[in-house]
Amino acid sequence: MSSKERPTLGGTRIKTRKRNIAAPLDPAAFADAVVQIYLDNAGDLELIAKSIESSDLNFSRYGDTFFEVVFTGGRTQPGTTKPDEGDRHPYSIIECEPKRDVILPSVVYIQKILRRKPFLIKNLENVMRRFLQSLELFEENERKKLAIFTALAFSQKLSGLPPETVFQPLLKDNLVGKGLVLSFITDFFKEYLIDNSLDDLISILKRGKMEENLLEFFPPAKRTPEAFSEHFTKEGLLPLVEYNDKKIFEVKLKEMKSALTSQIAEEADISEVIETVKQHVKDAKFPDIEVVRILWDVLMDAVQWSGKNQQQNANSALRQVKTWAKLLNTFCTSGKLELELIYKIQVQCYEDTKLMKLFPEIVKSLYDEDVLAEDTILHWCRKGTNPKGRQTFVKALEPFVKWLEEAEEEE
Image (cartoon, rainbow, N blue to C red; front, side, top):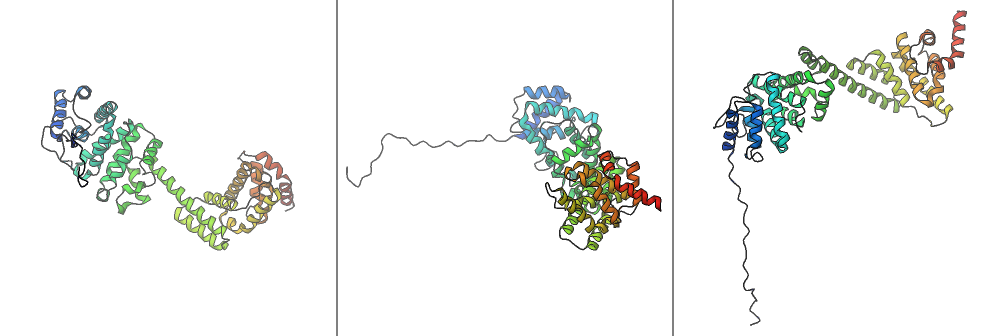
């Protein structure tokens, strides 16, 4: 063999790789077969479920088509809710009455199907997401049926249906702007709360990442706490209004605490701090008692406490009281508010062991700084109602109270 010739392998055969040939999609034939099952069983969902279970239809391939038939009675045109060509049946969710007792059997029926074919949950998500994003294509009555179905689906804990599937697709600007989302979600809330608690509803909203954003269901022009309260009060959902008011209150409370904490840490001028408090009180309409509680919490949180040095803790607390006495005095404007401040101090000293022995010194210091009046302190000693550490604190305050009573008698 010449040195220029290349060796060859004799008797070998090069095989070509076969390509996977996908069977052509035929959702129309699948849809017609499912519709026929509905028609053969005259809409009896229990019999339909048994027929579907025993059929050899390719549900893994045509899951979306199956739920189109369940919801609308037949196949819909790709990307729309419009009916496509092919057979239809009259037993769909869209065709039934908008009543929970009429729609509930469909939810139970779907639950049975999903237990036997759990992979179909993704197809249910797909179809629901598409329909909810196309609410404007449905009639008002049909949207109500979808809302009732959705509420019952969560109420019945339909296998694995995630709340974000429902809530997130609704937040399309055009749907929200037309008020369609608010109408849908109102029907959903009302239906769901028939069988479930507000806590259950809040849990679903949290999982759907909507708990903090309920106003996003409202058109932009109506996206205010007042509009929220007015709408849901009118719809008979007062517990939801109260919950939302509480959430707003907590957010504003947190904002006020954060602003005060920063100013106190920076040792801002006391007049600036007072104005900050007044502005927050005006904006959030905080009750006077809540303001007194916040002020005391913020002031004490700012103290640099020592782990074991009792005297150092006492000095730090009393120094804080003296420094910010004018702030407390500005908002403790009545005997009732002064008494609330004593209760606040009482509970804190009772629950925090390092402050247990500081109660009488703090009260005396607040008296010296004209924050607490003599009558308020005596009233607390004689008729105070909070039991936390009361006996211990009354005993500790006895020498000071005795001095006050003697001064009162002399006058």
